[in-house]
Length: 179
Image (cartoon, rainbow, N blue to C red; front, top):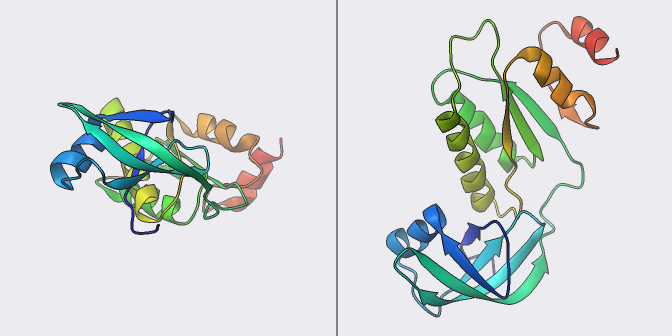
């Protein structure tokens, strides 16, 4: 089963319609056709072994044949808070964090950062998360969220059990987080 390609969708039913980038990748790039088997994922922790039953102009339909629990997910939920970096460095951090099993990712803008964030960049980071999840066989693609400043990034991590935030002055950070 490990050789099957993964496709992420919002929800799964007995016959699931796949559209958008996932459709384009399957049909136009990989040249899948009716009868091919794939894995559908809906961020539930399960893999749905499915067969493509119909290919339309902008979507395809896959029939779910089996539902299997994906045990590759980390048992410990880890959140990562990361300052937004210049160029494609943030994409690299997101990719590697997903491959390492991080459960959720928040990026924030620092007053010392010369990079800027917008909706397109956030959308791109979420696509990187999905692609990394596919590549390493995860059934959950961590959502990347945006925090507009350092204070909101701290608030994001406050109620998480395992939240990583790297900072060179850890004594100040420990004081802030324990308030």
